[in-house]
Image (cartoon, rainbow, N blue to C red):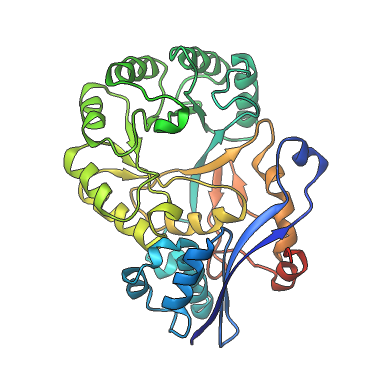
Length: 367
């Protein structure tokens, strides 16, 4: 089998009025790899023109099985292509990707990363609104959610968590995670601020504090981790293996969170998780939403130190399936994913686990 072409395109699929009113866009990015045997691989993420050119130079005309060689030649810069290659290999073997990489999970709990429209720091959303929406998710079977901690003064978000905690009960009833997102919050906490907030969140039974300081800060995160009890997490912005090795060497994080579309794809995510496992550290990859979740579920089924899946970003009060309902136009199945009692049932269809309708991709692609 030989790769004959690689494309990056966009499908425009109509969304419901309800979804549109909450900011859901009709565009669905697609990376597609075709072969001379008629097997087509998909990932529902874009590939830049520069990286598309690189991927074509490295992969077109080659047997798609040689993923390790392709990564060494730079394909880690085009992770959507790498994932589409895994989709091809799974389809050729009539197996889901998880089976190709030794996975044995058939379900995984999830948490919803909630971002309300308006100000990025959520300062125009009341604590009571946040609590009501997260309670709404709890009533639909979800057992965990994450919110931003961007507000100023910094203690305001602890007050928000206290209001949410009153609504949903203790940690045994519902987990709350905190996303600081390093510099993307608009400000960077000092180590002293991070310690203050970590202790406030500990008292509120928060599950973890994510990227509380600057991305790539190995040493202050290590100091923070050694000072507080709440788990400290990070790594979503890093590429390849070296930074994750530094985090592990210096004890920066309790949980590594590689983003497959940043770190280099599924195989690189698997390698990072294996390194973490050797240090007794969990690996919970950064999440996504809609059709892009398919490949994430496949790789996370192979990681013994991954215990929860992130659904990001959720636009409250929409339920996840209300956000991705329009994606059903691109597949031959009645529902995109099965969720039972706050857990994803990991699909066992070949490849990434969804039955993509090739004709629908052509029908809805933008010309």
